[in-house]
Length: 629
Image 1 (cartoon, rainbow, N blue to C red):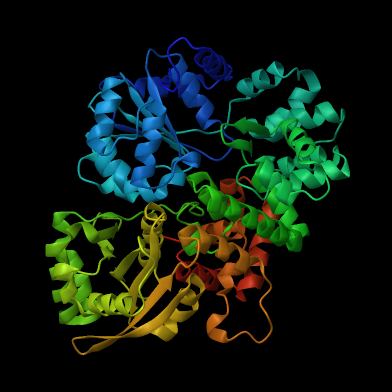
Image 2 (image 1 turned 180 degrees about the horizontal axis):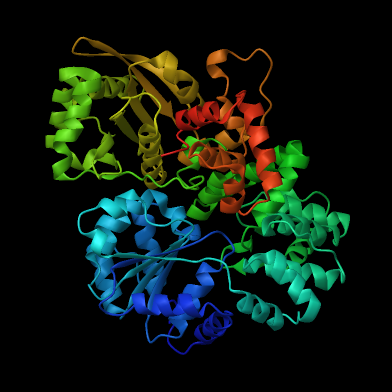
């Protein structure tokens, strides 16, 4: 039973009724019940592809057990420590706990037996904190249930102690009998049920969409291909059943993370927003949540893919219109949901990956531990020389909490970064010439009152230093967690680079510009600065969206030309990340629940947009963009 409402409330009864409506999954329910016993594992990953029924399985299992659960939904939780603590407070019905210790006390006081984190992949930036701080501090009898599309990453598997306290439950296709029962519950039996079962191959979303399509068009022929291919065709059937104006509404709404009346008014053309809302609510694959209306399962992805392939110009226009509306709303009343709406529209992977990591990207950064010292200093010495290592040592003594690390398959340090808030009097850190130069620039060009600045001092991988690599890409993405945490006050970010010509194409797109030079020992570094400008971090994200949707003007300076990876859609970036991991087109289709035909088309589009001729060249582009790790 959840703790979102008092025991015995109507909301509890409705939630319990919905949960018990789950058909089948007897084996998975029994396994999950066993894992939730008092002496069971401390963390359980429940993972599987989109639309397979993970959340329904968890809710049904918990509803049948005498356990109280508190739920965090990664889709609606700000991926920062304050954001997660605030979400916990809301779920518990108490003010936001100021610390992990206070959160654990509140969880114990509410009699919670299980902490559930749904859509866990959306909290990629908090992976280390959830593992090392929150989950580690929970009472021994309170496991954390992590529900998402990915199983435990290398950090969970190699972190001291977690190997023996970790379990996972992979949710796969429904057995044929369960599919028949699912269809019978929807009134589908006989020959139609047999046809649906043959092509759905155990995927509940495929079965449900097929049942809806057959209800609208009795006798509709079902292809014998992979279920994803048929689902694409069935979504087309459902759209074709709509009037042209209604179809345009559904396609426009698929661009959005969530649908609200103001956003719907921004993207629909002539239809009344209230009528458009009613159209969307009537669809079998939409649900109304506390923050708006959302497409269920993979519906939005399939619909948006089809629209992007058919009319990319319209998609760009819709994204731009939505971004302007979101920015206006954030200017009046900043909140996380609006920021998340903007992030959903961004295509730049160094921004987007912080919120929606592509493919199977699971290489999060975490705060450095005391035993990481030697590896961190060694990386600094190897790539930047003894003076840089001495400065890293000084930073470590003064601000170890400023260091983040990325770990390799053996649990060792594969890369590190150091980030700190920059004040007018930086203390011990002021002995670093890079920090001193940034402070001098702040004095020459002061920020508005109440604004904050960061210095992103190092981002070095153990294999290639500051050059593009999965490790550096992960550290740069992790920096966005700090952006989000400080977005109400953050105005500037300073960093130093050794090779500005090589870094300029990416950094200029992010908004960085050169503000000076810094001497560190016998090395000359370039000091760069990103000023978020009007609207702070939210304004910066919004400008990214608008710039991405604009057509580059002829004759743009090469250094300001966008890296070709930014021309890829979000889905194409996801395909590229998996392609770089060595997946075949068949494996891509199975993993992303798309047809092999669509996977082939995505790969072809990627090659054309990147100007590459084979998978090896495409993989190099993915590494350079930080899409793999």
